[in-house]
Image (cartoon, rainbow, N blue to C red):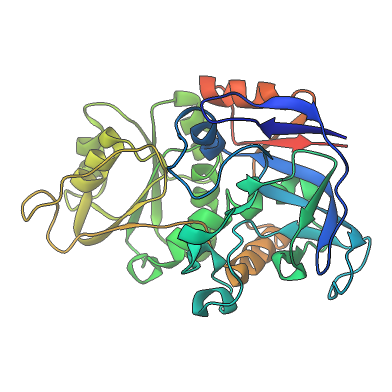
Length: 346
């Protein structure tokens, strides 16, 4: 079968022929209906180097996946051939305290794992089939389209987790700022509307991304420029935002977030743009909580899929065939994608 693979660090993706995988003991083979193309894949391709992570290429890309159970390995149970499922992305040890709570994104043994998940050290979903190591990573889709459901496993789950930690601050009259209205940011805007009464302000360098943000519910949009902080401050009567969610993560957006936030607020870094924020007594508002988050838990994925089935959230999807998958990453790198690219292998 054909697969889109990362063959080496500092290298673009390649379409190659690989053998169809067979599920081993306890494993499940998925016929992939959709595999999301994530901006973090660009960092894998062009920014990361050997030794940075405990795993590396070659492997098939695609860590946002949904499809149908195709075959069960010996001893695998809990799902049946033909079931429509979403694949939970981060794979931990399965035995530590956090893993048994469903928080495999925060597995305590991450540093020693040979892969972080399908498409992250081991073969992912940008092929006709992928093998999942345990049925616990599979969540029923119900009537959701696997193509539209695939991005929910990361592009929605990641902001959902980040937003839930700040829900006590998102009360009536509060303001949440979403920095970066792309693949994750456009889902964050919808999730904020579904979970809270907060007023949402979207910030981006791209006017077209801000158009999408406005269409899906942002109360205000702000172009990221030298006046962006002042405009957010003005829109909050000079107080600042209660919560700032940074889905970019470069120096400029982190500085913006710290300047736009209010005291006792939250600044949450989600994007892996490589930026840093100097932290000192007078460099951020008093008691501003600055935190990073990574992905989300299995129970949270169940909740995200429930929101989608209820029609509360929906990813803005551009579909690509497997042959055109490299083009999806080219458009992403050029900044011309709107929403989320999903590769449809079949």
